[in-house]
Image (tube, helix red, strand yellow):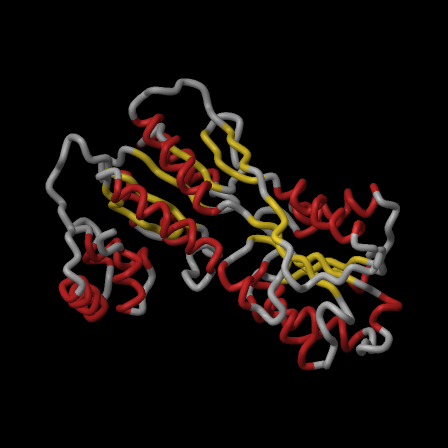
Length: 346
């Protein structure tokens, strides 16, 4: 695989969106001169081939990220983005824009995007602003959403059933003998945490298995590692928990992302509460780091490469007018059992 925008972004210590702007003549002037020079210097060092000559067989693709998605230290989305870039390059197509949704709404970058004769757009977020959606559809009918239910009945969408995944996580814990199961998750704009699929699936499972949990063991976080740490520390301190009494209050947590879970693990370690002997954790995403956490996380594995593959293939079929009706594709998830859940049934 050749050098990608992401490779340059890592070396230059900027976002992929910034590299995209520098490489596109129409948007290069939107980037500070010093930053542009640094990006171009690294592109030259890495021998990046930026062919802007029109090619009738080469589709011009943009992908749009939400503010949360665009934090390129977020490994879940990074794995999807890497695979999209790899697949498009392998198929001979070109990423001409990598933009952050909030930036498009605030300034003239949307105008540049709409004037760039795009063949298709992939949106990688949990929500796309309605005004932005309408403007994009005026420019190109070829839109594919990853992980986004927005207008999903009229647009091509590739996603997993997060509500079902959360239900499976709780069912797994119940089968391991757990009855007191807490939750740490976050908002997904425009929905509050209690309206997100993962929380709804958690609640559905509690009802199904006749489980109850004190509300102080349900916490809203903001999806970052630090937030997982702070929320778990808050739970420990507010309830005076330690390795001897924690089991009387809560035996396990479903944590809505691996990033949050890794932060929660740190808080538990600092308070000498052992996972899984004192408390069990199951999380969601199966990012690469989950296997290297201490202990390795049992987690719901999302098929990130398959999400990217389905989105790219669907977009190309749409561009080539080979499908007529909107396609909504749900990909299956699976539980990867590692070392963070104790079997209380033994």
